[in-house]
Image (cartoon, rainbow, N blue to C red; front, top):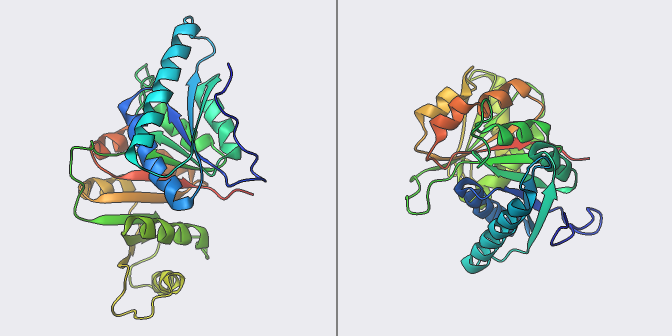
Length: 279
């Protein structure tokens, strides 16, 4: 199959945000989420539709793919978002193709459930497997229907591990909070009043460059990280959230992409960002 555009070399232009498109409403919502990210980062948006190589009706699927890409691209253009949109139709296993695409992407973005995720053991698994296999950061997007009003509160939740200097995840939380006009909740493996948690709170304040800690522009909360993070999300599923976790914590990522967690977050704006540093 041929692609409708060629992605730029990472050395010559900013890395694009890649969105997996499959014709589902979840992928379409993910594309709009990614477009807003792309505008904030001033990078192009690359929409990829993967046609499985063993599909017996590949010609019909190729037409379906082209129609799906055109529909999303036209909707993005009509939205007024100032973003460059590229489209590709690629062939192979969706997880393998998107993992390969992650090598030249700044972010892979997927809807939490896809058109082809309904087979035995497959429901939601494309996003889950890509989240664990990709070489760049991955966003798994839960988004309310456009007709549904967002929640009144916006939070970026940074799930920290016990590394001494979690600079990357804190900086990302601050960046995303700025894009969303959101507050920051840092979940740490230490007690809330411990010296280490106080240090994390001070580190966030320092990154923010807050001139008045008693009257902050961004609300910052630091709480102990529970053993079951999805349970915490279940208790606040009406809150508009982005959850950021390090990609090298496989147990946590497995929790967050589990179908049970997806069911908890259904109909919310609580998306997951699996953070990976690219070298």
